[in-house]
Length: 359
Image 1 (cartoon, rainbow, N blue to C red):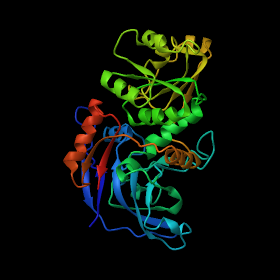
Image 2 (cartoon, rainbow, N blue to C red):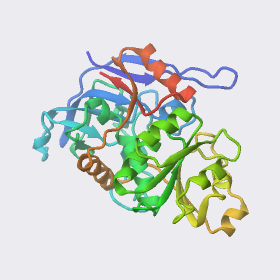
Image 3 (cartoon, rainbow, N blue to C red):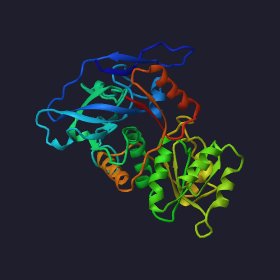
Image 4 (cartoon, helix red, strand yellow):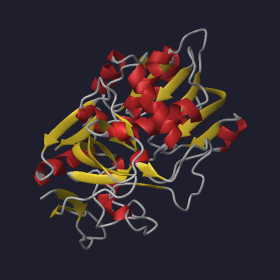
């Protein structure tokens, strides 16, 4: 029988939660009208999964399989399916529901949600959504064909990081143009790396930060113009010295850390520059000093993207032959200890790219 991976409810120790992973035997699902049955080949972790295990993410469900990112093969079509060419094709799955095409945000926030380990609106059927299972049933409109140059592991690495990076860079930064200077913080994380990979073919000058000199060097090999170690005092001044004379300021920052990024960026960003914030791994609050307002900086929140943007992102990956970076993978959905080890990589910040489970 197929398996799913869920979280197991457990009381907090010392006020801190850490829900164990639980392996479950389940029957093979059957697709309904306009649904497809997908045999999963790989699923990937995100920071949200790490937060879920600590009870730090809204809408937690102990029934929904874990993980938002996945790649598999369509093995059965339900009644009335119109996209019959999907049968026997490898696909990547959308990691969210309820946002069609509005450039501003979900058309109806009350129905928008991610998938994997959650059921925020207590919707019937949502507890079956999550990539940590051998078979999944989704609506036929919630998949895109896997770009032909990608392996299933690379395909599983794409969805969440890809759409988050796409919207933060291409939409919210307002500076995704040749010759512009964009700072990407925390290089080595999946979203940051994906943003770098999207930017390079567009001719954007990308600079990066990391607490690891090795990660900075690897980012330069991928096309970044340079980078600075944020553990060093005065890293903002070091960055300023790297910028080209003809464009001596950063135009935009794509940030997933939060913390004091606004204060540190003020020394390098141009007046009216943009900070696109897609996450706050340092904590749920970030600074916003009055000096930022006086400098006319724009702070823009950014999370995931629309279904239309997801298609644009996958098409861009296909057209530019981009390969998402897999940091490490383990084999077997039933190898719970090995999957736990991937969470250790997130905890230690040792990954460079995505952490993937091969099924």
